[in-house]
Amino acid sequence: MEKAPIPKNEKERLLSLYKLGLLDTKPEERFDRITRTATKIFNVPISTLTLIDAKREWFKSCVGLPVREGDRAISFCGHALLANDVFVIPDTKKDKRFWDNPMVIGKPFIRFYAGVPIVNADGERVGVFCVKDTKPRKFSKNDKEILKNLAAWAELEVNSRNLSLALAEEKKLQKKLTEQYNEAERSKAKDEAILASVGDGMIVVDKNRKIIFFSKSTEEITKWKAEDAVGRHTSEIMQMEDEKGHPIPANQRPIHQALATRKTITTITTTSYYLVFKDGRRFPATITATPVIYKKGIIGAILIFRDVTKEKEIDKAKSEFISLASHQLKTPPTAIKLLTERLLSGKMGEFNENQKEYFREIRSSNQRMIDLVNALLNVSRIELGAFTIQVSKKNVSAVISGVLDELQSLVEKKKLKLKTALEKNMMLMLDESLFRIIINNLVTNAINYTAEGGSIRVESKIAEKGEMLGKNILKEKSFVFIVSDTGQGIPQKEQSRIFTKLFRADNAIEQHTDGTGLGLYLSKSILDHCGGSIWFTSRENEGSVFYAAIPIAGMKAKSSEKMLIGR
Image (tube, rainbow, N blue to C red; front, top):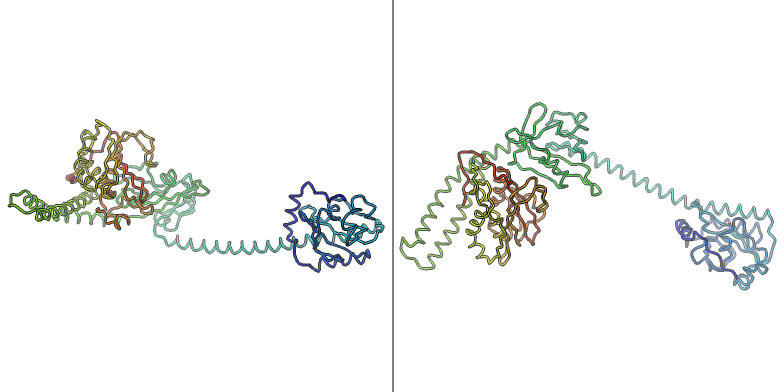
């Protein structure tokens, strides 16, 4: 006996067969009528529509056999599958390939076989249509033509099922696409309604800053029509300058930074960004620029801006009130400080240790009040622009060491490990009192937000232009002051607000950590005014690293009638 051969493209053939979805399905009349017709035309007891699986022949339709499948290796159809024409065996006992086949020498005692391959829509041979007899017989040319026609009928039914499935799937897909299109239209209408209701200006640009969307509110603000603005560069629509009318360099504009850093850039009301339009109008604005990222690449950005003239006026009024109130509030705490110092000095008589401890607590609480009042006064002066920056050449490491000495008692009280790595004998043009405020705020924060037994590192260095520190690339050669700690860190969702006035992170509030919410705001404001910058990296429950940079040329001087108050 010769086993049924395996086609060279068996893997592809099987995949094509399985795609039909016919294997192991229930009998269908449309196939059964063909096998019944074949048995009547040829007067044979057996006819099958056979699908050739990996190791079996399975009968989609069968007349004359009690089973639905057989072993492919010994099957007649396995041989017929590879035939180029009708595969005929007039007498199986006279054919060396089949004379000892189990189906010849045993049930169903096949003595005659004729079969035609069935080809599906992919062009793959998936099965055979055949007739079988229990006695030898001749098969004429006319018989072959009839069998081929019956096989073509069966082949049509096989492929029509596949076509029906494809049509059904296409209908499902069309329905789904229609639903998705309708949903997209609804979403588009909703988005357009939302955008139309937004009072802020909104512009969408591509990666080259060419405008691709211009909202209705932006038309009203800029006096440009959307059809005229789309396709233009943002600089053709509006310019950006500082409070004094100096143009903001391109690389410092929020939209440029958003495209360059792949991060959302947001300005605050105290930042002096002014938008200038073609008709000469000019107003202070808060600006948010958000990069649009698709498949890991930048494809554009969304720019939202808002006129904050009223907010500026309100802030100015509040700052003037705070300045006035702070002046009035300074007197009582100052008097209390002097009185407690005299009481503790022994000049007012001797007190027992418990009484002295109460006085020390009063002094400590009073000092916190003085610090808060001074911070509020400094904030008001900065926001009103009423403060002086007086620079002179200073030994930076000596100034830093002086502040650290003043804070040593707080470090020891919390049993913290303080390490330093300071740039030696570095001379820089500084306003010492302002620089001390920055150092004091950053180091005090590290102390306050680091648990007992933790560690703090204070270092300074000269960083070159283009050098990356804490994910920030320096725009010029600078002196950088760095404070790192192993403290509670800043939650990711709150990091964008950390330099906002009076802001305190949730974990700081929950853990009752000392602080006013003014230190970082004040430090950033000072650095912004003197040409420096500040940034940080942080992970919640792991710690933070703060960087304060001053150009190597030093702080920029500024004249006014008032000075900020140092501790």
